Amino acid sequence: MNTYQLEGTPREVTGKKATKAVRKEGAIPAILYGRAPVELPFKGTLGKGEKIVETSGNKGVIITEFSVTNEAVRNLIYTPHIYLVDLSLNDGRTVKSIVKALQFHPVTDAILHIDFLEVFEKKPIVMEVPVILEGHAEGVKAGGKLNLEMRKLRVKALFDKMPERLVINVEKLSLGKAIQVGDLQFENMELMNAKNAVVCSVKLTRAARGMEAAASTGA
Image (cartoon, helix red, strand yellow):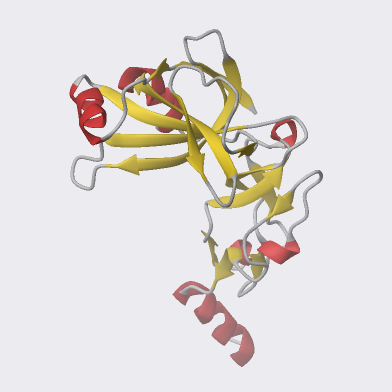
């Protein structure tokens, strides 16, 4: 997986008004998740932009609120590729992370908010990975049409084992047949989608039906 360098500015003032002000300045509010739970009351020292969100009982998690520029994330968001993000927060701390979630404006499609998730060497992560079909399917040779039903699959793996794409060979896929998630196996990773979900299929076309009908009648 390729690495993307990104700088963020910790936000010491938060809330709705502060968030609106960030957007007016042409920046995007963001949050970094992923830290291990801490005991409450917290006795440590919080860094710039950090705050504690109570989860349950006497536990809480430390999140970091910051902002990034639109220009800085353009090639990270608007791309078919997936990246491991080296996130520098301008306080001397750089963390490895991935984009967890995006919020877009319903009318303008402008990015309103980004959630990042800090990743660790021995802790698996889940990401949506693009699917690439390889080969010329038998069903297509017989007149069928190859359809890619799922352009991305949810993959669970260590970040250094996460692939940039999942390549699926379809050469033996015949007319009317499909490849489901449960049919696929990849080394060092687990697919999280439903096992019976159809990834790709070769569907009968009018031409293929005509060929079958002609073959059955001996024409």
